[in-house]
Image (tube, rainbow, N blue to C red; front, side, top):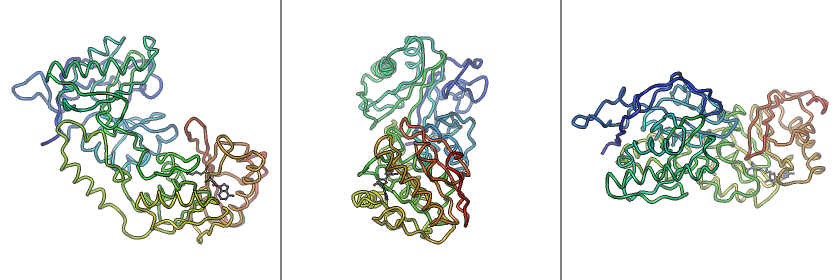
Length: 444
Ligand SMILES: C[S@@+](CC[C@H](N)C(=O)[O-])C[C@H]1O[C@@H](n2cnc3c(N)ncnc32)[C@H](O)[C@@H]1O
């Protein structure tokens, strides 16, 4: 059965742009179209039921890919590589036009995305009752099975709202009241993201309601069963690997590997493995009429894109035997343990294959673990390691501590800003030519 759902067109009016700010306030085009207008334009009315609109698997609609701060350029680059043309890039999301089939593929293939959102409806919204009324016009009974489970997640900024749980509650009420009315049954609801996930964004008297086709965050790939200490999220690690310029054709060296996230993401990239294949549950699988065959075919197709040739060496090391054991186990779960060479050693003893290559280090930076004076010595030693043992490589240090970074004592070629949880971090890049010049720390 093809995936299909219908929406009731109610407010086809287009409207002028608002004084938008932040992600959900920057219109990609002016005036914005309403979802009802979009559906009318591309899909047309259902014969015999002129008030309702059929949405097919391949019907194009507005999509939004959310991500962490600092990662949107990598989401955009990934989308371009996958043959999409993003329509707008914001701080933590990228907009494009795509179909449900595209959502399926993006959930499987994207490395730096956190969720793939499919727009159900957008509308002007001045208060909770507006929200309830508009949310009630979406034909939820065609999207959610009566015995399904929903989770509503709402965010934004509106003067009438001081508790966003209330917004969750009103959208949930609209869904269950409509389903009770239309089909005499209602889904259960709660905070778990294992079924249908609905995202509401409301800002400046304007609201967007999305179906979150990912469900749980795509950063939870499922391979990191043993996180060890201060691990990076998988999407951040993928972004850092992409930002380093690594493409699998040259060696990748990751001293201080911790739970192995950077090395595992590098191996997944080098082998062109779709990270979504590691997960078994996605929000889109819970849509009423979910087409299992299309999904299975897409999974098989994504699996076929895997590069069979062994990539250049990927080396990961850590001074802690527990870290290396966790990293090995995580790599095994991700199916890339055969692509990574592990060592228990001080970072300075990590075997570095002949250049060119990429070396990335995520040393502790004192916010969550480690001691400052000791870390200053470590960062100085990292600079020496890069300078003496990694000549001909691109060196990358990911750190949240600028003072410590100065101890590296090398001239950066680029500094890129990322966020690790709430900590502003930098990826410092160094071109480690043979005979790299030292730089005085105070001008770092
Ligand atoms: C911030 S954690 C790395 C986290 C990693 N990026 C992840 O996602 O799991 C830093 C790691 O450096 C290791 N480490 C600290 N001092 C070291 C040294 N002298 N040589 C090698 N590894 C060291 C720690 O054991 C720890 O696993």
